[in-house]
Image 1 (cartoon, one colour):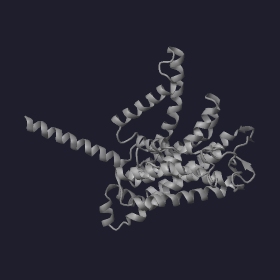
Image 2 (cartoon, rainbow, N blue to C red):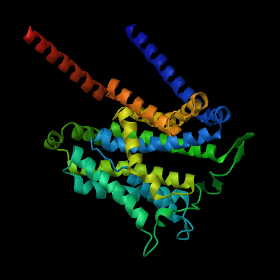
Image 3 (spheres, helix red, strand yellow):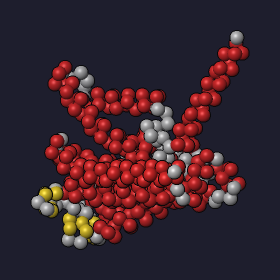
Image 4 (tube, rainbow, N blue to C red):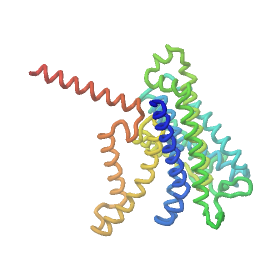
Length: 375
């Protein structure tokens, strides 16, 4: 009887899980139409960028969240993927390679750059690794900005324009298509493409998290010396983390170039790396659901704050010199408050939640012992 009740409960829970997945799938499919009708098509474009940042954050989560390697130059791999797509799919070199070939090429070249960054930094951790990766990101941006003489490779600060839109066969994602009486503008079709690739990257991240490689990354994050003593090849595992994270960024960069139609070195500055890192820390390092939540919040929340700046101008006049000042002030204050009251992130992983919980209990015990000693 007990086993029958357990089986019925499991079956009921399974149905609830599937019902949740189906409802989420329907919501994601209808989201561009709902957003476009209520808020305008400009917000659908923001949704497209949100999915790009989700892919970026999941790639950096492998390096920072799983392996514990602080990378402040991650946006450089994003730039590599974008420029590979732009240079091979534009009139700059007269090459117009297809989309299905450009994404793997961009991901592969970005992975090579990830290995080139990881190889000299194998013995560095913490602040020292952060400084080196920060310098690497700036080196890539400066190279892209100056590789226009004596041979024009990247077109320098002018960037690359007239980039071919993403197309698969005869289907161009930048054009408006009609299906079952519904009109799908370019920003809608891009949304579905980005959503499909984001789901693929989420699937790969889940498989990596539960694999031997994922457990090796966690072991290195917790204690690299102990992991090496247990037989883990820390060098290869760390290089693999850099390569996997960089390949995700390369895919995102290629999608960004095809979506925008124009790129320049100014799109890949240090602020972008910091924002992607904030997404991981805010959502919860090592937890895929938390990383997705952080990426969604930090992409949509600053845009929503634009309305607050416009509202304060309308009601009270210009309090600050620029409405963007108020927007960034509120944005920064919200980040500070979240980090104070939720230091493990909004959706931390189970391990990270236990670590913070144990630290809190130890601190409480130490305070209690000090109080007893004073008495």
